[in-house]
Image (cartoon, rainbow, N blue to C red; front, side, top):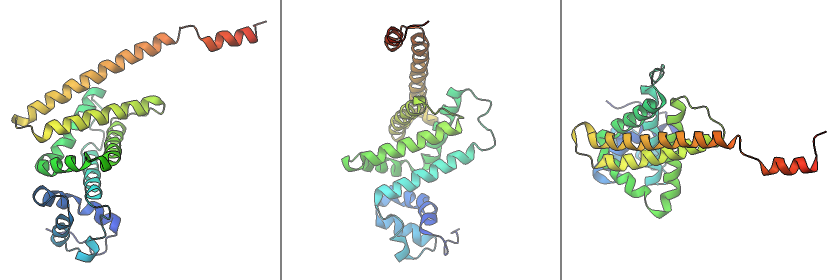
Length: 220
């Protein structure tokens, strides 16, 4: 059943049509035809539809990924992650996002190919960062120092690699994808432990700047 989008703004249409555009993109590609079919299915004027994604395929994919992020967040509203450890939270979020994409894996495959084009690499990195940031915030991360950036960079890499495995995974219940994701998260958790130990040990190392400062301003 189509929604009443007669009074929707372009920004509202961008997200409202995204899922239907993705469904069509699986067969027709991420192009104007996919948008036109999505618009027709939702009673949106054809001329208006041409204005919704001015940047073409990357804009369509951007909107689809944003709608998936919103759906993922809705799944974990109300403290659904509160009783999980941080590793479990991240795994649950990534797996949930992939599950939301599972019905449109061909659209995802085509989207990955478009984002891998040299002219779209910066856009792809920004989308990966946005999803990783959303996941960390849902997981309860409040870091504001360099950890804020390192966590998101690592998770963006994990998610991107896992999604590539996912599109070709024919194992039952995506067992291969889940195993791949588990190994990647284990690697990151080990890295975080090693980093924490290293940072802790540097607290007691001699500081050249403090030493020079004492030479200039000896204690009295």
